[in-house]
Amino acid sequence: MNILVCIKHVPDTETRVKITPGGKALDFTDANFVVNPYDEFAVEAGLQLKEKKGTGEVTVLTVGGEDAMKSLRQALAMGADKAVLCSDGAFEGSDAWGVARVLAAAARRLPFDVVFCGKHGVGDDNQQVGSLLAALLGVPAVTVVTGLDFDEAGAVRCKREVEGGTEVVRAALPAVVTCQKGLNEPRYPSLKGIMAAKKKEVATFRAADLGLDPASVGRAAAAFVLREYELPPPRPAGRVLAGEVDQQVRELVRLLREEAKVI
Image 1 (cartoon, rainbow, N blue to C red):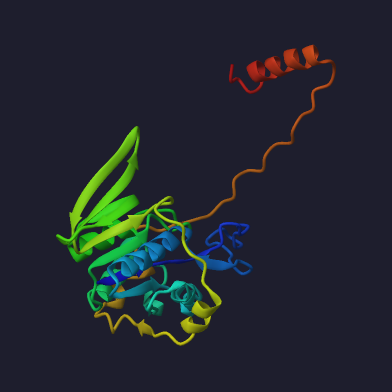
Image 2: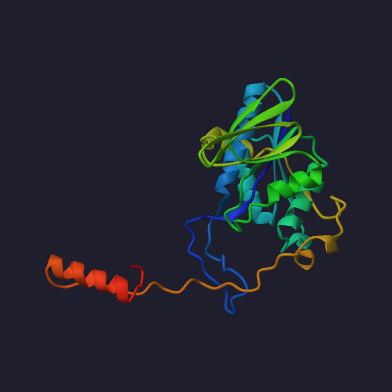
């Protein structure tokens, strides 16, 4: 079975957000970049499926600059067999549609029976790329999956948590599955895996390799554009109420009613 896993190179969620002067972009100068946490569930799902089937290959795929090689190497160290980096200046500034177009163009050049993605990337939080990728490839999409089972009839049974219960969806392969927390517990790369990752194949695709017109992707083609960033206002200073407990309670109730106007 050929398993394709799409990952994203994102700032660590513990990174302190900074905005460039003018508010037009985020400043990631001091940020530590990692594999998108939800994509780790996708990588683990691919590895477990290969182990269960006893055959096949897991290929990880991403769109980004040369720095994204760090995340590809981590996925390879976890146990993936191959990696593909889609890197071209033409891809910079792509919105979700543009990224999905690049991933779809690359996927068409790679054999796959199933595509795993994280449910969303913590960098942009748009939760669109997986579904758009499936639409472009013309295959079913099952999103926010917390349980997986592949049958011998060439289909995948997926569990999704919904309000008040669990939904079960069956989709014919090939399909795109986006992975949610709770699906599995991603493994840590072993020392042996880290050493082996250095020797594993990493292919690079440019726009021309994918048959993409540079004008059809990237910032110029983006339908969704962030115009400005702004940090939330600082929290007001706290207030310490003086007096005995009963006085404090009366004053707190007065403040909630007259100033905060919540009661």
